[in-house]
Length: 250
Ligand code: TMP
Image 1 (cartoon, rainbow, N blue to C red):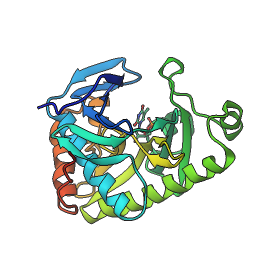
Image 2 (cartoon, rainbow, N blue to C red):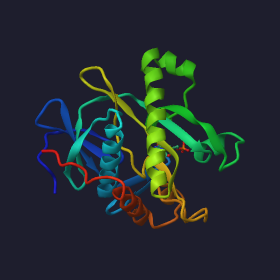
Image 3 (cartoon, helix red, strand yellow):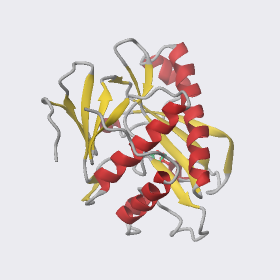
């Protein structure tokens, strides 16, 4: 069921953002749409939106409880979230604990190599340019963030990585890598925005060593491994085991 909301403000590949009654808030709908490879591959996965919304809510609440500011305010319905309105910085911050994915396509680093310290990669969020990897010099040239914000983004992202890794390990899940987006609220504060879900993280099941069965995230969709929603449900089940029920917001 859709909660009361104002006009559509923005539609992304996996979410729609609507105006809320209060100007400083938005209502976020998590869609069942799945895309990969810059939307070259598309599908509908029934139940994905609800699972990503609920998993994100649990994870946002857990990192907030440990001092990380996020845009999350609460759940409005199964696949609807209320969030603080922020200006999203068009950067995708990727933290990698284990080498896989594009890192292994673009460099000779062996898949499975443990990255210590975790590798931070910053991409320019622009579908038309296929989200290119930025150097620090290019990031500075683009002028999207100040030097202080660049440092703060790295500090927040590394802290989120340590927290998420710790939560997931408690329920035998390995955080391989993930992507964060940050936004700036009306007070000029940096907040973790977007979502933290199996769409935006690589998460492996530590209860098996099988290289395909252990994948519980969107790589199942990218690689046509099947059981995508079942795997997201497994992550949800385990995350529920270490978190309280997400708060309702009305
Ligand atoms: P990559 O190895 O393909 O660069 O992906 C790194 C991480 O970022 C992985 O957890 C998946 C996530 N990711 C997104 O959330 N959105 C994207 O558009 C891409 C390419 C990756």
